[in-house]
Length: 244
Length: 375
Image 1 (cartoon, chains in turn green, orange):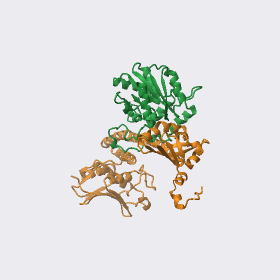
Image 2 (image 1 turned 120 degrees about the vertical axis):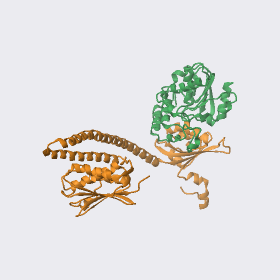
Image 3 (image 1 turned 60 degrees about the vertical axis):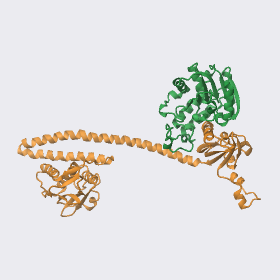
């Protein structure tokens, strides 16, 4: 099961999941508010915590009667996966965390990568909408995956996000602090850590590795926050290695 | 900066170096991983970094925190998926801390679509545009507030109309009914008093109807017609008879052809005639008759109300059909001055016209409309 993070949708995995299609049943999903998800299903309160997203993962797994799930979560969804794995013990076989971060804000000795004022500036810039986040939505096409001909696609048409939901998702993501729960992970866990990742720096990957006993930490050659897009081969290779 | 000495004009024009460096846009080239390989003079100017400092930075290192996160979580994925992104507003942070808005376009390049060799970024300064957009946004917010206030006002007005319509009409009907019952039972001396009650009540009813109609037309609903093919003379006779009862001392002469059928709203035509005749009775010279003429030919249907008396002053004739127009000289027994406005609106709703001619010999209001009955 591949789950995308903040700012994108299931397209995130387009270069990675085909490599596993032969040996695994692949589950791809758009989280509520992203991609072609049903926007009317969005509830501010439920999704103000990562718990809400974790409940969705469990619901999907139950609906599809999935067992022994290998959960691949990117960015914030790494934490969603961890929460889900603890809410429904036994549902997941293993966790693969791509650029995980339990907390984005520096706190005493903990290095999260951002200062609180920086996160406040980030959330403010989303509120003011002056970075063009809203352009990422094509309202005509949203929720109409089979009828794309009906709407003239915007040129930047992938990873569409409803701007209002993106705002709240950013809040949920960047203000979340899951440091207390990650040490409760007992299933096999792989952490993929990129170089030069401004969202989840190396220190964070090391922290997660330290807290999750028995986890495997891999420093990738890939740079940035999205190795699944910038270095799909390396990503596939590391996941394969972990699974065998 | 001066062109290089060893280039002639044409060579300069074709020079990639010159095009890249001396541009109004910022150009940045990064490798496939997003590490900056080269930036032009504008980028150096906007970012405050030297050429050397610029190299080996990620593109997102130049951006404000919001842009950084936006780039890493959304724009970079977008770029990888579709090979480009365009018209994205970002902020460049100068080393001094000042921010500048830029519109950014980016394109992946390479010989193989799946394995781009490098990425080109074009940055266009757009602080002015941002300011303009923000002004528009503020203006929109203000307009929305104004609109909300207006909508509340409209609602209040509609409620007021409903109050007028129902709460005033009902007691008035009771008065009128009681007065007409009294007419035959009171002593001869008191009949005059009952007739005053009758006249005033009829007048009051007209005023209420006019206010309701005025409100409706002003609220955009307009005068609503229920048109049908009508034998018009009985309608006209009834209006005249009712008014004659209220003004027993005045004479109203009707001149008409028989069997006139008109496609119209009979209640509205009755109201229009009633308004015109009331006006004529009020403003016409006491003791002189009012004449009503009805005429139809193959083209048009015409209804005219004529009275004797002082002519309407020329300057006033221009504004007769506007709402709240009253005759200035006399103390008004007339109320609001809406009657003729409603008449004109009724005429307009029938695709017809209402005109006035007034001189020493007579004052005439003429309603005209197309006469064809509809099958």
